[in-house]
Amino acid sequence: MAEQNPFRQMRYTTRSPAEAVAWQAEVRGRVSRLLKMEDLVASAEQIEPGPEEVSSQAHDAYLLREIELNSTSTRRMKAVLTLPRSTDGSCPAVVCIHGHGGTRHDVYDSTSIYCGFATALAERGCATIAV
Image (cartoon, rainbow, N blue to C red; front, side, top):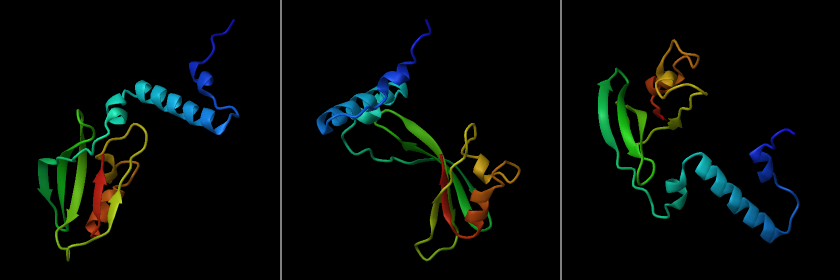
């Protein structure tokens, strides 16, 4: 007999509204445990970003900074941030997402599959961030 896929046990079937809410809470709990995100889910307080600069590079049109941010009360994540060198105080901002298997640097690399689109945006006066 073939083993039953444990994810099939989480499948939603028609229920009352109260049962649907309970199912949703149970599945969210399972998913957060599988992704090892219990600290994020359990954290009810506001997480302060607590940015720290790791490195900085000046380019003609923008500053590129590697930073670390608090993602939960116990975890930090690294990010690449660009800010225009000349601005009147506000500018467009874009979150630059790489695909599966990529890194935060790939969207700035003109030789990558992403053709450096984040660099192109930064050169045109946009603030960018990639994690």
